[in-house]
Amino acid sequence: MAPANVDAAVRYQLGELAAEMRTLRDTMRRIQERADRAEDKAAESRAAPRRRMDELIGRVVHLETSTATIVADVAEMKPVTDGVKRWKPMGIGALGVTGIVGMALGVSFGEEIRGIVLAIGGRFELVQLLGCENLSIGLLRELLRAKN
Image (cartoon, rainbow, N blue to C red):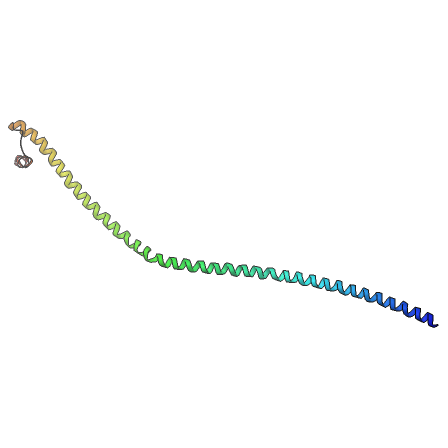
């Protein structure tokens, strides 16, 4: 081959080589971009479970704190609750005693009212019989006892 032909062939081959190198560079750049995107997606994918795990840890810590607070509150309330439980039987006993006393007073009061009514009713009879209007209650009682 002649030197001009060799020179043209070498230039042609160098042009083709340069074009292939540009193609390889573009291909490598696209591969690198895909790898970067895949890595970003993988990082985002890994970040979601980590973020959820962090949220769960925060919620668990909050629950533990709330539980500890509730346990402390219940521990403070227990003596009060025990005291109130002791009050119930004491209150029932006091109500029973009050009922018995009230019943006794009611019976006594009823008897007194009955005695007064009988005395007044008897007094009117005695007043009519004796003709005297200024009799005392004590005297009326004695007269009624003597009459019965």
